[in-house]
Image (cartoon, rainbow over all chains, first blue to last red):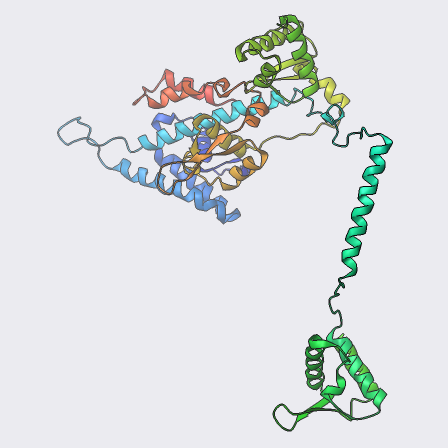
Length: 259
Length: 196
């Protein structure tokens, strides 16, 4: 006898076990462990073919069933007569099944209830802001007060502007290495020379930031083999010479590569 | 001293404006009357609506009252607001929820031991829906999180409070009876449980 049941209807191993017991018209208190275990394992085989992940949790119960099955084979009576030596190995399982059935039943009751309540409609919480006072209240002022307030505002603005005049706003230097390289190349072209000292590359009054930027740009140009850098002595003048190849067309390509 | 008639009438108006379940405590404070008194008035109002079989009924949820439609009119409302949104809990969600509702506060381990299967995702889903919430931590090893139901759970299933949950202990009592005799009693259980 083979079972063809859609397996995803079972919510867990107990659900399956309960189904098998009920289907076999067995009493929960007198489970034919051997028969049920066989059926259960056959199910798991089917499940394995479908979904290995689910089977892992079902395996635990399968193992428990087999353990009970083996225990059932052992005599539970003492040899001399009818004194019970051991508890029925099924007791724990029966308790668990009943516990599970109890909550499955509760779930069914909840489902019925859900179905009922679903048919009762409520009003979602109303937007009560129509009735509650708004934050922007009307200003209860006469003209004089209003003019005075406006004057105060103007005065304050004037004072702030006076202070501002004494301070310059410093913009962050936005010039990039790419731009600087372009500038340096233009400088070579403008001067019509193949060789310039590092000092000559600097922008007049550019400050420390410009020095660093120029230096890094120079290194970048050297890396791109646009220029060759030479320094004869420590702390001496750095001589930047334009490489022959990179004149004209070549420079352009290099420039595009960077940006 | 405001008359009882005025207060009841006011409560009715308040329920109408509020929409959501109105806390008896809040209503009582507005009239500066005792909680019990306010509760009685709400109960009277509820009874009046019920007796007259009005299209609007008053339901009690977690010490709050709310206007809702008469269940008998659901069909017509569905026709008015079609298509109606079908949102139901899955079988596994209902099972986990049942365990939490009846055994709360309960740990995930206990839930999983009853169902024999992992419940992480189901619990997560129920938390997201706001039907359950963390209810402290167990004193057991690892101090696992305890779960309990929320007021939204009561509202979702239309329970007044947790005592309003349907009784499932009739099955529970049988569980504790050791060595139940086979025969009539067992037959009874299976009839109760199998709803087919």
